Image (cartoon, rainbow, N blue to C red; front, side):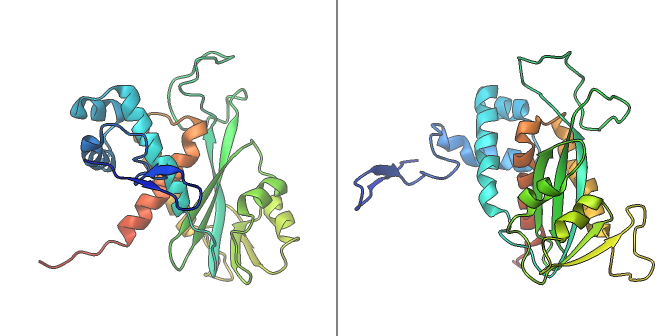
Amino acid sequence: MAVKFYQCKECKKNYRETTGTPLYRIQIKDKWQRYLDLMERGFPIKKIAEELDISIQTSFDWRHKIISSLEQFIPKELRSTVECDEIEFSLSNKGDRNLKRKARKRGNDFIREDKGISTVQVITAIERETGDKFFKVVETKSLTKEQIEIALEGKLAKGTTLITDKHNSYKSYMEDHQDINHKRLLAKDHVDKKDKSIHLQNINNVHSQVRDFIRPFNGVSSKYLQNYLNWYANQNHVNSHKETLKS
């Protein structure tokens, strides 16, 4: 595949047609479409490397070029009715050769009994009307108002109704955001007993789907978790907006 080069009229710098895309700096572009197909079908990095006769490192690099580029597709703003909650993962240093502790077996499930394991919280927000999803990874054992503030900064439109559990950090966060309506329910309740519209059922379903999505990767390093969550959100959005065309 021939790659065209261009020159900026203002700064006179040269650039390729692939500059700014996941294809940039990839040298074996004839295998790119096949790679995307295998990746979408859930093939692991090693298996894709075997199928395309490329190195495992190249297969790894290509995957992360793709999923890191998906950040640009996350929703800029959520509005109307938004459910918000967090999901917890154990902190993973998978791939880090300079660990200061004994390596653990791979896995994603958080083990509360192991006091030595640090955690990451994933703040999740879902717009009910569109199904748009936003994820933000926070390395912490206990969520704070400040972390929620950073995660949701600029994400909620004025007049939005935000539904959360009764975690005190969400209550404190909302005290500084009077232009947003806040509705709360007990975490153990699936639906508020007085108002059936107050629930976190959508977000609970998504958290279950996220765990199912992450599990086949046999443990995702925490430093890459945000990229994988963006991949899930993008894939979910595309699948929910597909139309079957009649032949």
